[in-house]
Each structure stands twice: as structure tokens, then as C-alpha cells.
Image (spheres, rainbow, N blue to C red):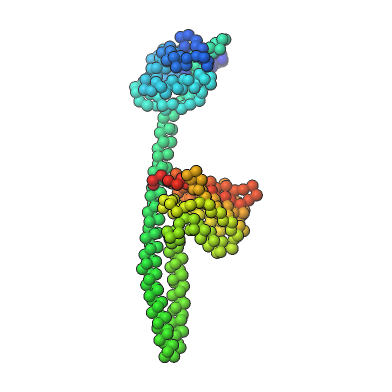
Length: 371
């Protein structure tokens, strides 16, 4: 059985899963810069009517197809006339539009519509109506909103957990410094006293044992100081962010042997603790990645404040980083860095240069949003 082009078009129109329709005006309109567009839109919303639609379009509005014929834009946008008119204005201005809109079915329930709409003109260039193809994306839009909300909730949770962890680090560091540090110092003093007394009585074997214990005690105290510093650098509390960044950068260069270019140009004394802690931790993570993965010989660290934002840039001259490496398991630290910045209303950009090397650029508002 052969079908004519008209029959094929009607069959496609009837069986399509997308909604097709044509709305025509009672009479053509002149749409130009000289026109009173607000008045014209008021007229259009009362005098443009649905003339053709398919079953898929009717299903989108949960109504029998015959009930749609003759409907005006005002009847479709009873819930929000201004939004409807704004969409019509954009379509008439451009001659076509692709958009997503929040509409209402005929039973009053909300529906999210994605559609493409095209104006129809007469031989004098006047608008006589428009045709459209659209689909119901309510479920997809709801799923996207729920996903976005879940992502925001997870970020808020991660930010809160990070805040709690930072507080715990600070508490443990202080306890180690105040209690364990003092106890170790006391033990060292006692051992030193014992060593002196034994020396007087020529107890060489015990003197050697005390000397050995004193050496081990020094190692333990160095380890405690290192752990305290990693948990919460005292320089961050005592001298502020700028000095802490300088100290950490020089410490890193000293431990790794990398050449260091340091550029600090900011007054960081009055910054919120959330910002200073986050920036310092991000510097540690960025430098850690340089040491582990970059194969670099030089690293540059720049800290500055401009236009209400604090920026930290860490750049190396290593082998660079690929897109697959950014998604790999060893990039979880960089992912955490980015999420921490987002939680504070900032951003992190990670890029590889044309000639190699990797740049990590952090930007944070000086007044971060609350976790």
C-alpha cells in the first residue's frame, strides 16, 4: 500500500511522541519597533487560537484533543500571564525561539515544557500565527532538580564535616602541644638531670643509656611538633595567612629541593578563619600534588587580594596533567579541593599549559557563604 505525502505527514503528525500544534491569529499583526508591543501582546493573548494539534500535544495537557481547538494563549497561561507574554515577545522579536517553560495542564497541575516555536508570516511580513513542536520534560526536570538539590546537600554536609574536622585538628593540636609537649619536656629535663648525676658517679653504661634516651626523646618531640604543625600550623594562628603561606612554601621547597618563586601581595590579617584555613589546606594539597605527580623542578606560589576576592595560584613546570588524570583516583585530593572552594562560594581551576606544567588557581570571596 502506497501513501501520499499528505497521508504520510498526517500519519507522522498523529503518531509522533512530540506535541505539534499551530496557533493562528484572527487577523495579522504588524510587529516592529514602532508598534505598541504591550498592547499587541494583550490583543494576541485574546485573539490567537489553537487551530491544529496532535494527540501527543493533547496528552501533555491531559485533555481531549477537541477541547484544545480554539484555545487562546490567555487560557494556557492563566497561572502566569506575564511570563507567557514575555515568551511571546521573545518569539515575535526573533521570529523563533527554543525555550523551557513552566506551564499548567488543563487540570491545573504543573508541567515543564521544552519546545521550539516558529512564527508564520504573510506576504507583507505580518505575523499571522506560529507553529510549535514540544515535549513534556516534567520528570526529567524534576529529576535534575532533585539531583542538584542532593548535590547541594552533599556539598553542605561535606563543608560541615570539613569544618568539624578542622575544629578537631585544632583541638588535638593544642592538646598535643599543651599536654603531651609539656610532659615530654618534663621527661627530657628529668633524663638530663639523671645524666648529670650519673656522670658525677662515673656510671658510664647508664650515662650512655640516658644519652640514648635523650636522643630518642628529641626525635619524639620533633615528631610531635611535626604532627602538631600538620594538624594546625601555629603560624596560621600566631602570624596570619600570608606568613603561613610563606612558611609552608619555603618548608616545601626545602624538603623537596624545588626552586620556589613566591609572590605574596595582600593584607590577610582580618580574614575569616574559614577562609584562612581553607586557603592553607588548599595550598598543602596543591603542593602535595606537585611533589607526588608533577616531576617538576620549580614551583610558583602567588597570593593576592583583588575586588573582594582572595586568589591563590600554584604553578609548576612539570609534565602537566591530562583530563583522564583529573578524573583518576589520585585526583581525589584535587576534587576535594574544588568542592571545598565551592562550599565557600569560590572556585578552583586546574589547567595544563601548552608546554607542560600545571596551574591550580583558587578564588574565594572574602566573605564566604555559611557552610
